[in-house]
Amino acid sequence: MLNKVRSYVLQHNMLSLGDRIVVGVSGGADSVCLFDVLIKLSKEYNLSLFVVHVNHGIREEEASIDQDFVEELCKKHNITYSCVKEDVPSIAKKEGLSEEEAGRNARYKALNNSYIENKCTKIAVAHNKNDNAETFLFNLFRGSGITGLTGIPPVRDSIIRPLLCLEREEIELYLSKNHISYRIDSTNLTQEY
Image: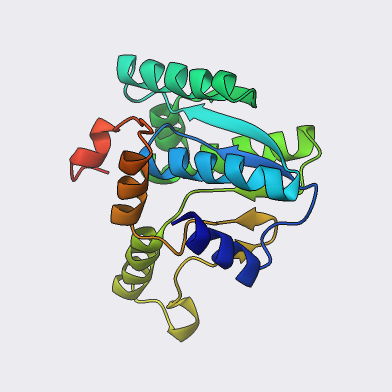
């Protein structure tokens, strides 16, 4: 799997020697896999990594456990870590957005702030093939025109998506084979979000 991601990164010119990368890590399978892959690629590319975790203020105790998990993961690998706490339900109400959209906005704001603060060159997020298919279908069902019928691009501006070549099943298998633990967000087990 690592070789598949390495080839995808090369194909889309995602990394350069000495890149400074903000990595969004929720603690879930996708982001933990991204974190692990970038740790491994950091030796080849001489990368500097900066992890941002966003606590959305939705799952209270469970979210605190996720936050602690990501912080410990970063300490274990001596990676700079920051956590941003947001009250996403309040933001969603105030701005007339769904909690999912307000959460996404909060994440990208936190990533962008860290990008600027740490003088980074890239922002890495953990979208995979399943997310790409979901985005395409969402655009189709909302009646998007031909130009809108695209999935998620592997590179957009400073944002890179090294796992876009993988299916969720491949990610979970990689983590299992390498005995890498991750957190499961209970909201992903419901249809609410």
